Image (tube, rainbow, N blue to C red):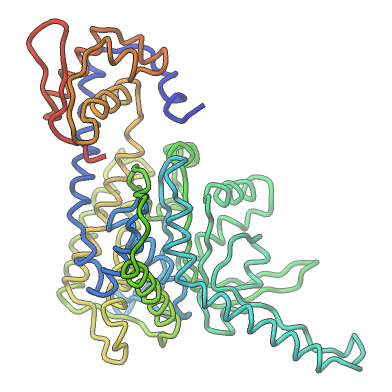
Length: 480
C-alpha cells in the first residue's frame, strides 16, 4: 500500500473548515518552496564548482540548495580533525554537518547519495584501502619467524566513509582517526535504521548510542572502560553524517518530542518530489567531455578539503554581530511558554548550524588559496542564516502539517488539470474516474469536488466556471 493511500484511509469526510485549512497548508508549503527557489548554484558556490555540480545533478531530483547541501556534507566529513568555526574566542564548533535528505520512496534518494557523496570521494576511499593493504603486507613480512605473542599489533584500517557501526566499534575507530588527524563521514542510505538502533540501545542496550551521537555532533571525545573490552579514549572527533529518510518514518520517529535535541542536530532537507530527468538521445562527445570534467572537479575539491591544514575559522565583527542578533531572536522564540519541544530544540541549535554552514561556504570559496584565508564575512554569514531559516521553517511546517484527504485531493486535482503545463478543464465525472483512485477520495462526491476546486481558485491556482456542474482549470503550477 502506498504512503498516500495509508494517509487518506484515515480521513473519510470533507468539511468546509477542513477545505479551508487544507488550502492554507498548501499555500504555506508552496510559499516556502518558492522561497527555496531563490537559492542558485552561482549564489552558493564558486563559478566553476557551481557549473560542475549543476551539470552532475541535472538528471537527479534535486534543486540547487539540495545538491549543494548534500555535496558540502560529503566534503565536511573529509575535513581534518581540528577544523573548527569560532563565533568568539570562547565558543567554536567543528566544521561538520548532520544532514538528512527527506523524500518518499521512489524519489531516487540513493542516486543523489551516489552521485554527490560516494563518487567525489571514491579515490580517497581507494587510497585508504590500499594504504591498509600495504601496511598489512609489511606487517606480515615483519612478523615472519616471530612468535605470535611477540608480534606487534596488526595495522587497523582508516575509513573516510563508514556505513554501519556499533557504538563500541565506532569508539575504537575514532581513536585511530584522532591519532591520524582524520575526519569521518557516516553515510546511511536509510538513516531511520541508525536512529531506531540508537533508540533501541537507549531502551534495551547499554544506552551509549544516543549519548555518543549527541557528542559526535559537538566534536567532543570520550573515555570509557569495559570489563571485556579494555579502555577507549579520544579527546576530540570530527564526524559528519549523511542519510536519507522517508517523511512518514521521520514523523513516526520524532512524534512531536525531541527532549535530548537529537533531531535538532540534523538539518532536514526536503528533496523535490519530481521524476528523474532521463534522456532518450545518445550524449554527444562534447557532453561526455563536459561530464567527465565536472566529475573530475568534484573529486579534486574533495581531495583539497581532505588536505587542508586544520585551523579555527573566525568571524569578522559584522558577521558576528549579525549572527548574535539573529540567534537572539531564535532564543526568545524557543523560551516562550508553550513552545513545542521540537521547535524549541530546533531553534536552540540554529547558531551552531549557521556557523558550520558559514565555515563550509568560506572554505569552498577559498579552496585554492587556503594560506590567504580571511575571516568569514557578513555576506557568507547572512547566506548561512538564510539557509538555516529556510530549512527550519520547512521542518516546522512538516511537523505541523498532517496530510488529510482534503490536501491529497486538492493536490491531485490540480496536478491533473495542470497537465504538465498544458492545462485542461476538469469536472467531477472525469475526476472520479481518473483522479480519485481510492474509495476515500471518491467519497468526497460532487459537492466535495466543488468545495475543493473553489478553494484552489481562492488560493490562486486556477479558475472555476459559474455553472453547474463545476469545471476547474489550473492556471499555474504548484511549487511542489
